[in-house]
Length: 128
Image (cartoon, rainbow, N blue to C red):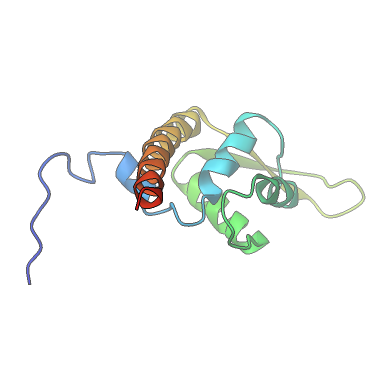
């Protein structure tokens, strides 16, 4: 059966379309937030902070953090540099870019809409 094409903005033209495919883990918006607020700067710091937010019940591992950071960097939302480690190997330090701040705001919009939809749905279920 052939699907009907949705009318409106095409996914390519809508920057929020890229976000909706990443909703399951919610790692990306939290990483962007942490970098924007300068609460964490390198992988393991970010891992601890992401786990503290608990936006998902899925276990977040360091590989997911680094995969997400790599994708964010490839898209120009995050930049990194190498810095000498204190008594250990050099570490990659991450910072958010202006484009990353804009992307975080798009995430906030998507999450706000999704949050309202979830609250509406749970309210409907409670009324049964």
